[in-house]
Amino acid sequence: MSAPMLSVQQVSVDFATEDGTVHVLDGVSLAVGRGEIVGLVGESGCGKSTLARTILGVLPPHISTVSGGRVVFDGENLLDMPHRRLARDVRGRRITLIPQDPYQAFNPLFTVGTQIMDLMRTKSPAPGGLSGRARKRFDRDRVIQVLEAVNIPSPAEALKKLPHEFSGGQLQRLMIAMAFLPNPELIIADEPTTALDVTIQAQILRLLRNMADREGVAVIFTTHDLATAYQLCDRVVVMYAGQEMEDADTDSFFASPRHPYTYGLLGSIPGKNAEVREIPGEMANLADPPSGCRFRTRCARAEVRCAEARPPVTECAAGHVVRCFNTANEQVAT
Ligand SMILES: Nc1ncnc2c1ncn2[C@@H]1O[C@H](COP(=O)(O)OP(=O)(O)O)[C@@H](O)[C@H]1O
Ligand SMILES: [Mg+2]
Image (cartoon, rainbow, N blue to C red; front, side, top):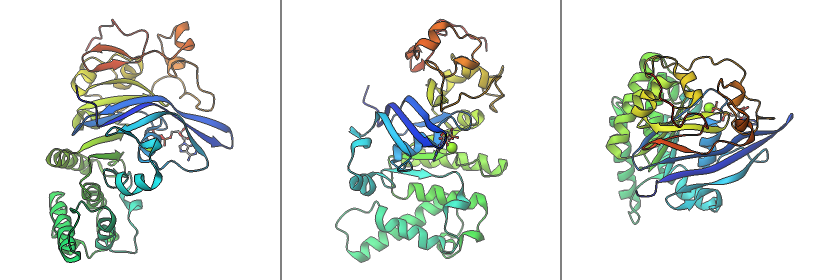
């Protein structure tokens, strides 16, 4: 098998807070292949955005520390890459972001066109060596073409408008366009539909899928909503309290989940009853997390060894891995 395009290897991140050090990510690993859409699923506070920020190199300075691990993108560890090169070549260019809240992401005082052309000034995928005029034409054509692809009516007119003149769904389409404009290899979509109406959410998901397929771009899609992951993703990674618990292709994940946390999330009708359910017990305290498996304090099947060490990765079917001592031979009723 060829090496994945992105591989997050045993990444740990701590935050210094008033209450002491918070161990937000604890040895998280996942991989993304070219053109693959990977859902990163977990309850609010489990560390999805922190992982997204770690990959993009935009963790808050001073208070955060990457205390271990590697983020290998196209063969290079981004955590070691010189800042200037990361900023120029990778962030916003080869890896882009669709943020959660499109209302927050645009500056209300400048037209959408100004903000988009500003992006193109530094992150355009234009081939090198174009004259100033040819470059302008290239950028303009690319912008119009991508705005059309995300179903913004009359793109040339739309560019002249201020953000408040668009609906939330349209603003998120514009954000999606901006994520695709640099022709990236990977897009990180951090709960991009959470701020939107339910009816708009489905349209935006379809759009994202079509665009990713059309442009051959891989996506890491974070969500707390399993139904969304089911609809959109090729593969699902479940995270709990800063540890990944299960990682499987979408069919296998919903047909035969293996981790006790995953059953808890799915309830009794995998794939259908897909809102994340309440699971008894409290979310692990990240300032003083449980040793070993962080889910063990809420797990009906916890044993002594779950506290002694974090369970290793077990491959229970081809491409389906789980970090649990207890589920290797489990047959789960569906
Ligand atoms: N800037 C920060 N300072 C201190 N703690 C933070 C900061 N950002 C996130 N955290 C903590 O990290 C944990 C994970 O947060 P986050 O990555 O935003 O989770 P998610 O995106 O899954 O909701 C939370 O417990 C949160 O309190
Ligand atoms: Mg988040």
